[in-house]
Amino acid sequence: MGVSLVTPLRASEPAAPWSLWIVEPGRPGMLDTCAFASLSEDRHPHRVTQDVTIHWHGGDLVQRASASASPRANDRNPLDTCFVLTTGKTVVATGAVVSHFSARLLRFDTLVRRSDHVLEFDLLPSYPGQLAQSVRAEWNLALTPLSLRNP
Image (cartoon, rainbow, N blue to C red; front, side, top):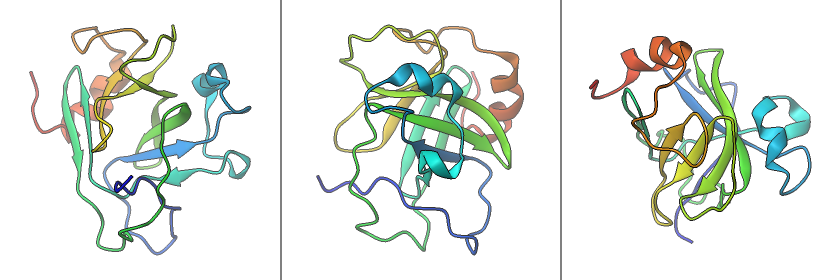
């Protein structure tokens, strides 16, 4: 498991244009609570500081590891946890992190992990789903200016 996934946010770190946070579900394995995930302390939020790519209907969000990221920050597997995607201090999406092999049926925001070796995800409005699905206007407004490619 050589991929370091998440580290706690430090007050001294500069704000990024977007941030991916991994948070614990209300109860282990109960991903239905992820639709209402928050960054409250009781959910133990950790901001992803490693290389990560998020593909979505309007483009690709790409983050390179921060200079302050430890090579062995946290070797946590984010599957079956919740996520919060923010731009600045605005929450854009909240939902569950699942494998592309998952048999779950989720009717809320979902990050689908593409690979076990790198942090690469598809952001979908529900699961199962496809990148071609239309998304909420809020995603378009918040994420399009930050995306590398805009279809």
